[in-house]
Image (tube, rainbow, N blue to C red):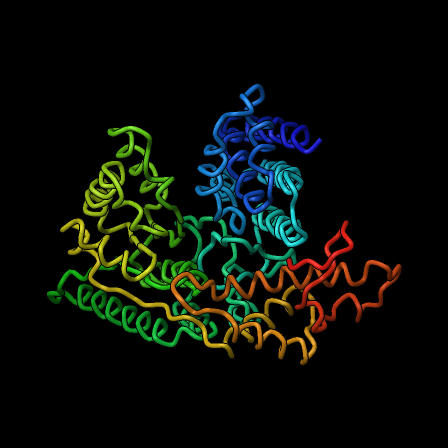
Length: 462
């Protein structure tokens, strides 16, 4: 039944893509990738996905296509797909219908294999992201930083702006999905953008660096307007740090700041990874990379895990093309590359053109336990939940037990804890026919503990 449901949803998405003018095959391909990303953590899902997307495929065939599709679409679990983002940016009347078709694909994907409660809850957040994007408002709050959350997803409470200072930017570090602005739109005031940056939890060194970069570029512009000689300053940036530390959120603010300074026409952010830059054959990658650059002109191209481009000749072709395009569009393109510190340093050193263009590196440090607590509490509040003080104390103990090595999820980890707590909260109220508003809103300490899994009689950790 689940494979049939996914196949049906993909057919409907292809029809919606055709109606929207983005093409049925392209819409189906996007839906297949999104479905794989949603179902990635569910045991048995790869075989179900292949049965739905490739009927007649031998049972002995490799499952690798599922994992390849999932890797390239993880960020869509918490950000709109590329085709939907394009429809929203164009103001298409078909955006809402296409988003609903994507939501149906997510629903079907969430049933593949043997999903956990938290996987089902995360799928609800993914649906909310796409519906919110089509409605022209920010998606629900999520941890600051990388849009491609590994295992979590935002809950469905919408927020009024793309990166709302209070409460979401200050607390939940929200980075909403916003339509690409056009040149006719009024840029947001510089002071407002810098204030929003300052409202973010933690990130003290990052804030200082962005303020310094802003002043440097502001003075350079004023000197040029006064007819004074000014050195040509690089505007491209390297962001290093663990996942969930605010890199994408800050990247979006940087795009707005550069626009407010008059350095960019649109100030939008286009986020990609290796899969969107590299093709399967030499010669095709250059064309694919240039097409991405064209989408980003007038704004910021944000390349996550950019060091993956140094792995082979296809990635190196993308880098060579990127360096040339950065030179050709030096006045209307800013590139931010992001990833772990060590690999990023080696990546920049692989190409002299990169070394000369990325002169400034900004390091995103892990959040302190107190900052994680504030992020968790704020994300819960933005979703209309209220953790009891004892629940926050329990969160503190969980945070203290986390190993803080490379790869620690930071805000993502807090997001995942909240997703699981919401699932446990719902299971705890399973026998309450008409819960009170307080019961519906309150997270108690046991919601952060193990819970009896749905459909079983044994204790299970989500």
